[in-house]
Image (cartoon, rainbow, N blue to C red; front, side, top):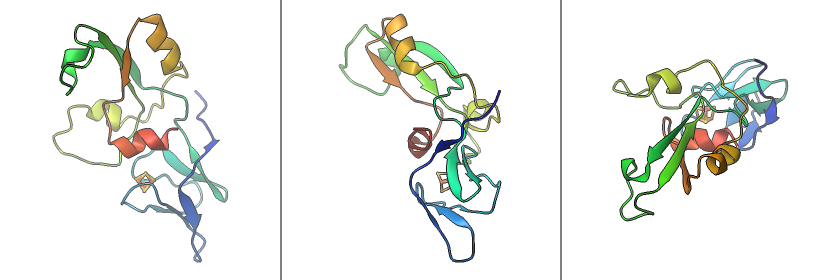
Length: 136
Ligand code: SF4
């Protein structure tokens, strides 16, 4: 599957020719073709692109009680989805097969899935929150 080349925000050019990502504290400094630690942001030419824009590594309908929320639409369902990639490297990660995946996933839109399944909310577990921002 061809990866996205959606333009990324939150980066700047450095005097030494690299570009630096400003999205998370890792401050990745990239040469042509390199990816950040999160894997989902990549330098292509003189710009940063989002390789997972509009893609998901998986969808799952969960009971809302599975989420760390109290008294939020009790008895309803929530659509959980995420992208490949994470900027963390936790040794105990229970979602390592998603967070370290090199498969950027399908292009199915989450909002369409949410409506299809009658969910009242969406959730993006499986990676550090700035990676969710990175994919938008
Ligand atoms: S969001 Fe990704 S590319 Fe940007 S600094 Fe963090 S790990 Fe690096």
